[in-house]
Figure 1 (cartoon, one colour):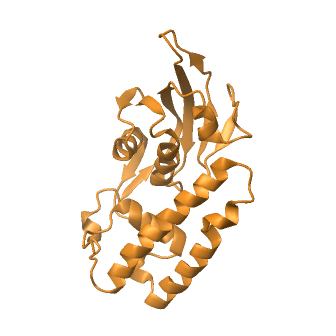
Figure 2: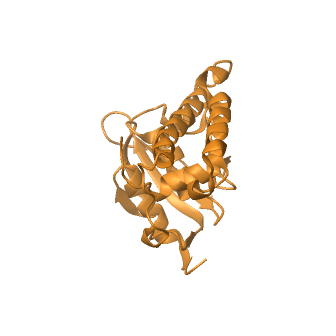
Figure 3: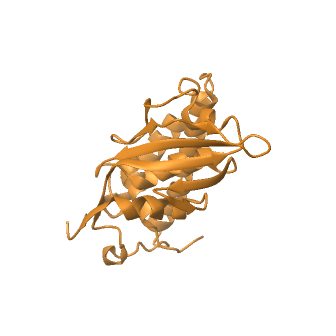
Length: 215
């Protein structure tokens, strides 16, 4: 059983799903909420949907809740210390950006479908897509084009807009889950980075930092 401290993404996810910070939850509240969440997001409940993307998102969320629940069980047993607030460098930061340019280079013809699902498969210049489970984060599409290399190559250009109320971790998780193993490279705000969650998180945070200070 791990005794590693929860990171900021995990703490934010706990507050999102369970309605309170871990330190504010009672064991009884946790057990009740866990049961409700398991029922709500169990993959079997989404088999009726024809959209594979919907089923995949439900499965990912269910797995995330299960992983969080396992760590929370350890916490309530006294086995999992939570890092002190003063050790969290992003706690006092605010982030927002209007039109952050993201370029996804891929040789996968179905990547755009995997990003946006059936209805949004053919998003074109200027069309807007709201990122699921965010307050008001959305993508505006730029033109995409086929490259000139031997074989298929496409650059999917998009612009990300989000506010202080949106979780960058949720945005990154949504994007990463849809391009991992499919994108050959990724450029965020002119910076070429690895298709890897922490690199994506830092690349979005850096240009979108608004202000720091005590809450």
